[in-house]
Amino acid sequence: MKKKDSIFVPIIITLSVVVPIAVALLMIFPDFFHIESNNNKFNSLPFFHAVLNGATAVLLFVGYVLIKNKKTNWHKISMISAFVLSAIFLVSYVVSKLFLNHQNSIYEGEWRMLYLFILITHIILSVPVLPLAMFSIYRGMTGEINRHKKIVKWTFPVWMYVAITGVLVYVFMAPYY
Image 1 (cartoon, rainbow, N blue to C red):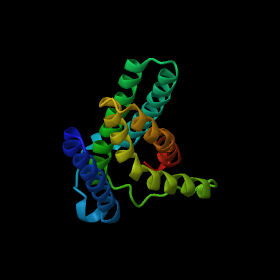
Image 2 (image 1 turned 180 degrees about the vertical axis):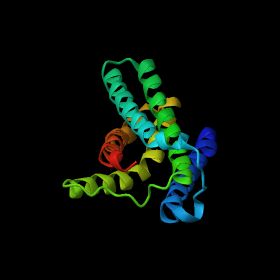
Image 3 (image 1 turned 120 degrees about the horizontal axis):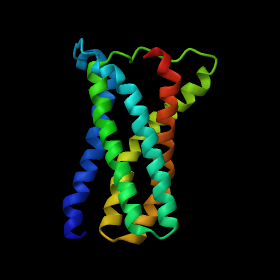
């Protein structure tokens, strides 16, 4: 293990465990963590989350096209930007779970089975996105291109799916916000 790895790999692993546990606790015990607020500023967060997810998907696609065209520096900028938007989403999502009380709402329309499939796969696949994205970026930034290429074969499709389905979940749930 390289010296850099001994610093960054444990950080990535720790975040990859702590963050999903924190989000799961907010989802499983929403009343315990809920903070009462009459502030309407938080009501626009679901739309904001959809915008962040949509922009992340666009940046992921742009980053993919850029690397296929050997535009390495622009690819890095695009992918880091996608990660930053995902991080902003994650923080904002946690804030929304603390201040908004939408957890009891669920889509009841004629597309309910499709919605549930999208929601469940979105939730399940969102868990590995954080470690996959962090390891992908770390391997790319440290110049370990072969290791980077191996992991992005998983990272890109999973991250893209989660970003796109995040928008779809919002579209289904928009009437309930």
